[in-house]
Image 1: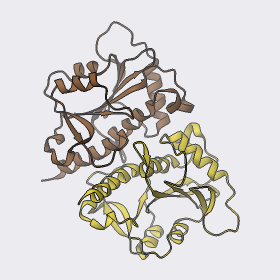
Image 2 (image 1 turned 180 degrees about the vertical axis):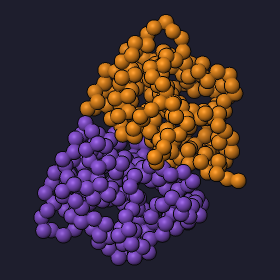
Image 3 (image 1 turned 90 degrees about the vertical axis):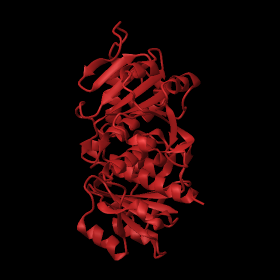
Length: 203
Length: 203
C-alpha cells in the first residue's frame, strides 16, 4: 500500500482550532487536510493508500494522524468535513502510555511522536522512500516510484527541517520533484498519483 | 491567458448556501471552489489564469462567476475562504439588464447566462478549446495544450450535458484526458498545469 507522509511543522496536534478559521488557528492544518483528499479520493472512489499527517504544532505536539483509504468509511472531499474528522481524532487523549498508533475507528488512528512514529509504523519492510523537493530529479525519470510499497514524504508551506531530513536520509530516502513549478503539497500528490496511474496502465 | 471553465450543473448560482455545509446545500459548489485553488494558486504565488464557474443550480441560475488570477487580490487556498468569496459575489444582484460580465471588484465578476456567457466573453480570438473527458486522447500527446490562449472545460461530478457539449463542439473543442484514472476536476486541472509547466520549461 502506498503511503504519503505530510509534515506539518506548525500544524496543530490538538483539537483547539476553529472550524471557522482552520488556516488561521491550526498552524495550517488545512494544507494537510487537502492532502488527504488528494491522496485518497478519486472520482466516485477511494484509493487504497495511507496518509500520515505529522503534526508539530501546539501543546500536544508532536502527534501523527494516520488515515487509511479503503478502510476508513465516509471520507468526504470537502475541507470542512476533513477538518471535523481531524478535530474529533485530535480530541482523543493519545497521551496514554501505549506506544504506536491507537485506533480511533477503523482506518483512523493517532500516535504520539513525530517522524519517528511514522518510521516505526513502516517497520523495516524496505519501503522505497521519496522526499518531494524542488529542483530534485524528475519523477518521470524514476520508474521505482510506482512500487506499491513506495512512501512519499512532503512538507507543507514550511518544508522539512534538518533533523527530519536526516531521519529520512538515514532510511535511504531519495529526493524527487514533480516538475519545474513549486506546487502546493496536495498538487504534488496529485501529480505523483497521475504518474503512478500511468505506469500501472502501461503494458 | 489560460482559462479554465468549470461546469457545475447543479451548483448554486445564488448565495443561499450554508458555509457550514457547502457540499450539502450548494449543489456541490465546493467542487468548483477547489478548482479555483488548483487553477490559480501555486506555492507562494498566483498564476495569471482565469477561472469561469458556470453555475446551473438554484433560482438565479444560470450565472457565471469569473475569477482572474493576478488581478484579484487576497485569494486564499482554503475552501471556506473561497466559499465566502463566492457567497459575497453571488449576493450581488446580477439580474440587471447589463449584458456580459459585471465586475464586483478587480478580478471578480459575474454574468447572467451559462456557457454562452463564457463563449461571448472569449470572443472570437481563436482560443484552442479542450474538453476534459475520460477515455479521450492523452494530454501528453497534444502539444497545443500549452498555448497561452488555451481554454480547458471541465465538468463537476455530473459531467457535461448534451447542449453544452454541442456548444463547445460548434467552437471546435477537442476532447482530451489527463490519464487512465477518473479524477476530481481539481486534480485534472493540477495535471494539466503540470504538463503545461513542463512544456514551457523545455528548451
